[in-house]
Image 1 (cartoon, helix red, strand yellow):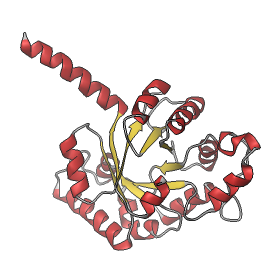
Image 2: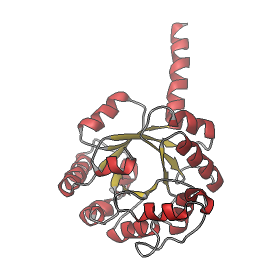
Image 3: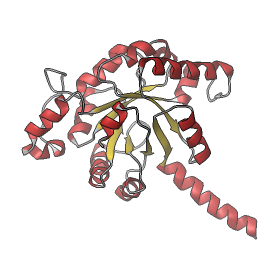
Image 4: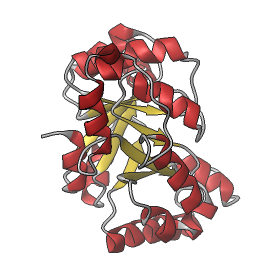
Length: 256
């Protein structure tokens, strides 16, 4: 079943985050069994060209590729979708108008305002008609995931999640806590209350809620699943590498 349909059915999907611009890393991650992988442009030095190669590698491995944008920019959305990404993760969405802007940038007129180009996504022109039909299909087409990572977004959450074309949301806990004046204080009652409110609002609207479990900790992953999240990013390439590297050398030192 396609990722878009799984999300629409509110099925649990688990993906991960790619921050290293190396196709071997992407291939290893793509063959690990995830439902999707996000190429992160916001907090990395990955270039547009590297992103295109990562998308190609992920897609050829049979996994859906998404791209986290540097910002909510229609030009970047167009270029990443033209490169073959199946969807986008939009950072710092604070209002319904922000969400509508992102959705419109993923679709050609009359549904949106995306400019037409012939690139990898359209098989360089040979499959443009098929691609046009795909992007216009409300039951398929580009995936749009909005990030809820500012208190303004929480205050406007109902309006944001009611925007047609938004498939899921994912919480950015660090930015959210900073916007509340309590950076990194995830056990602060003020923060836990806001998190509870986000999930309850999403459930009432039938929205697919997501969270990023940054550390490669299976217990934390299971906790996220038990809390009802359906779109879960499990760790990130650099944290998996760091944790595994440190665990190995720590065991060696302890044994000495």
